[in-house]
Length: 255
Length: 303
Image (cartoon, rainbow over all chains, first blue to last red; front, side, top):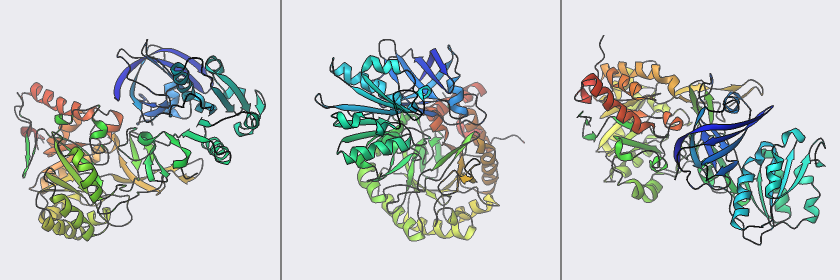
């Protein structure tokens, strides 16, 4: 069930070009799966009109809160990142199809790049909550250590491997160059990040014949499959990323 | 109790609020947000005789108080609509109207004839004004002779309420509307999107895959309002107004300018529940103003 609701910003943590917002709703949250997203209305921008699609970073059903980890790119996300505690944000949520839940014996790797690490946290939590004690591994990459936010949250949920392009944290290079690929047994990959990163991960997955899902972030208007703006050219033709995705198995993509 | 029923030549709307083609899917996409029974009608996605993949991504650009799109009539064709979609939506408690487009007159006629056979579709909206397809589309809607040809041909094959959706990308929209009326249109709806363009200064490239696209949203409202006023004075058939309507007040302005009904388009993307809110807001306005019947507002502009 999709809803449109007002949320109050109850906590904000800010970095140079990003912010973590904890949003609370008076209504009970509907069921939300890892990898789904929200459409946030942006008020007060001179050049903003449409909502901004933002992936769901974390959910607390007891307190009816949703965490959004937002990267400031242009005016809309800048306004969102600067939303003061106590202000209201209007969300249409939860949207799209999340990641597929793995089988209990799957050896899974969650690969994130930059702000694309955001949806992997909540998805990993749903996996661990379903099977307490289950092991999950993250492989998180950024240009430098400053790009990789909230790693402590990820370490609470699973094992964290890191790459940075400048070597300031973890192994130096891209996520696809990490040494774990040579030693670790993996049979499912879930990836979210910049397009070149996801394409590189998909290439590795194909070479190693590993099942792989990626989360796309094409530009959207409606977010619910009505306007057909956010299409990805798949093996079945143009499909809406907002409704059919944002998560796709790489076998459906023409990458 | 305010009377809200609108009669448009054989098509009865329970209230003047409809949703615009291409912004409301097939209604199902909005069922979590809006009780479709609260609407006068929904105009579903543009349908063509044959399957169309539409244009490549990227298909949209945000603009100040609006957006550009170049979707290009992506749809699976009229047969798919009839077999797969119609059974799911035919029993909605509102008028389900199909927007019909084509790239040549034969295609328009063939698609319209197939939809004519659908019992639960009381009207079509003929799209002679899509700016995003290379052939047909807007080409028919920008000359009087073009619109006479396509409307006349479809009129012969379609026997229910025929709405003709007009392009604003013309020098004299009243003349185009009169041509549609003369060719047999039961009503006209306006405006479709305004042809526009966006450029990324950093990359020096166009933002849209097709370079140009259709502008919609709140920014087009004054243009739409002016055109509705001009057309309503020029024709004797009902006018359906659309273009940037985002609130009940906007809708009432269109009624006062001469529209008998309105459509809500891009505003559905900003608030997916807006259409039902506008319908409710129109009633509240009437109660406040002592208007007993919404029809009293139509063309009620005081000059």
